[in-house]
Image 1 (cartoon, rainbow, N blue to C red):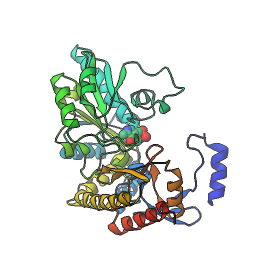
Image 2: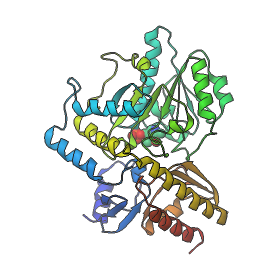
Image 3: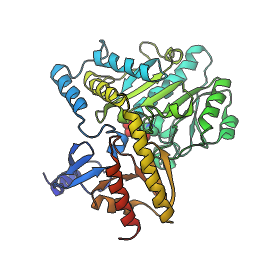
Image 4: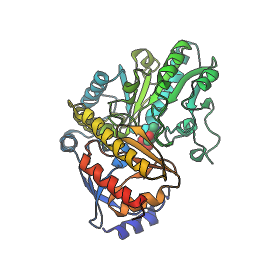
Length: 395
Ligand SMILES: *Cc1c(COP(=O)(O)O)cnc(C)c1O
């Protein structure tokens, strides 16, 4: 089918939650994508921080094919070999001792919020209130839109879930003031993604950790976007020398195969018992086989360090652009999670980048977001920066 034919079918049969789009991408390889009319693109969005290893990474594709020929699905009534392998890998490379698998970021956050409440209830000291931050994004289920600190995601879905309060992000005093005895957990993104690629003060997370520890409150890091190498470490919390009690993952975990995960300490894991929580597809053989291959490639010696160096190169080039154009308010982020705040809405810039064969996206109306596959090269970056230079210079 060509783009027009795909668009026609879409408009006739798909609920319009995503609006009109420019193209239909039908094939990918590494940094490259092709649309239904044969046009080639360089991908600086990775399907929203998902294809961290690049499109159709051979090891992941191989693992998917092998597993598809072996066993696609069984229920969690039975042990699942790739699932336990994935959990062991995630334990080896993170603070967490135990994992629960599901299908995406919102479900992972649901599991995190549920285990936090259940943990305190099981202890006989219920502390049902959950603190979240303004400008955060945690997903689109009823509980996670409630946690999400942006009214645009909540409008018309009221009543929202009770027991979730919001505080300013990157504001230790606000957290301290909000830590009443009924607060059981705090959820936040180490760097806010959808909220505009907002990087907190370097000392913020350590202070949050210290406060949570002293007040006996569970700390949940939503690493759905920042995790899996995106910020130049496997998990963003590693930059700050702090560990949460609970962490959620999704986006990059299967390099494109849908999967979510909630990991926690052994102590917090005791909050769930048989029957407390479940997920039909959670941790199924196909998705976990893909995630094992993804984790293996991501943790290969030097891979993420390389991506961190490429990210530093990108920041350097963008800082030069920012010095040249007053249109750019700020370049911020970490590793290969980059937001460029502009004075004006970025939609026209994104449109021009697309016309020039560069796929990227926004993070809010005024922030241009680059979240390329971690295999991006300095040559790819030079090309994008030169095209952006041309666009901002009015060429
Ligand atoms: C994308 C995202 C989610 C939601 O993930 P879904 O897989 O779309 O449910 C949650 N938290 C953060 C930080 C995200 O970036």
